[in-house]
Every structure is written in structure tokens, then in C-alpha cells.
Image: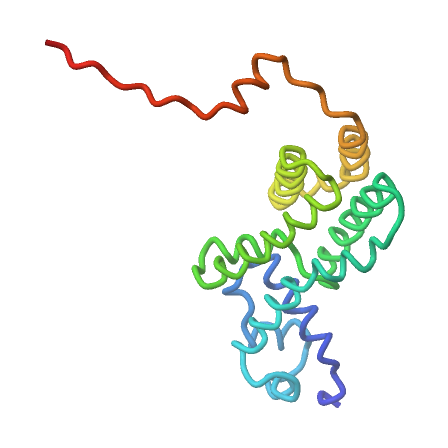
Length: 203
């Protein structure tokens, strides 16, 4: 009967354990208790705990490709709108263990250097995606930092997650506005390289 337990059941339990208790909570014994089965059931689907952990990380790394496919084509505003709605949906699904959680992965990366290196590379791909859709480096950085802030605060204050729809709307409105022109003096300063100031020796 335990052999009939699906691989996805174990993955969902592992995602929730990672989200709620960190990587140390992703233990075969604990997952088996959560699923009300014996440990032997786990080994029908995974070689060992390391294979499970690697799979959790790999599925998060591949999310960017899934997001691109689901966003599809359309006008700039339509694509950005779909991207924000998709992030909102995935945030809810991650709390149910149905998809990877950004919050869980970032916490894991903060305590494991090898994981951090992989997360950093995946994050670069995410930033490239944002730059492609937003088309402005400064706004890209701010939009991504806003998402990270939402994810981090959601871990500490779960009630704040309910405001994502409102926050996403404000973000879309801000991204849709023409970029304000810098004053002429600031434009000139930005184009010119900073001059090196030499300190005079006091005689």
C-alpha cells in the first residue's frame, strides 16, 4: 500500500518541511511521519536524502523557464501584468507545497555555500528575464528587490501576503509610467567618469 504513494507526495511534504523548518527539517524520518508511512516508502522513489534535496533545488532553478512559457506573448503591459499575476499565484501555491518557495530556497542558501552559488546563478537568469520584460536596469532592480522584500516579510508576517494583489497593481502602475527625465546636470554627470581626486601633501 505504501508503494502506491506518489513521488509528488514526498516532494510536496519536502517543500513544506523546507519552508516551515529549513533544510534540517527535510529528513526522511520526519517526512515519513508527516505522510503517515514508513521510511521504506521513501526509497521506492529516491535513492537517498541527498537526491531529494538536489531535486528540490533543481526544480526551483528551472522555474524561470516555466514562467517564460506561461507568460507568453502580447504587449509589454500584458506580459508584465501576466508575470505579476503568475508570481501571486505561485506564492500561494508554494505555501501549499505545490511549487518551490523562494523564501525557503533563499533561507537555505544563507546557510549553505554550495546552494548559494547555484541560487546566485539562477538569480542572474531571473534578473535577465526581468530586464527583458521591463527593459530598464534601474526599474528591474527595484522590481526584483520589491519581490524579495515581499517574500521575506511574508515569512515573518504571514498576514502581509494578502496584500500582494494590491502591491502588484501598484508595481504595474509604476512600471507603466514613462521614466522621468533626469535634470541636465545629472545626465552630464552620469555620462562622465568620476574624476580621481588627488590629495595634496601638507608641507
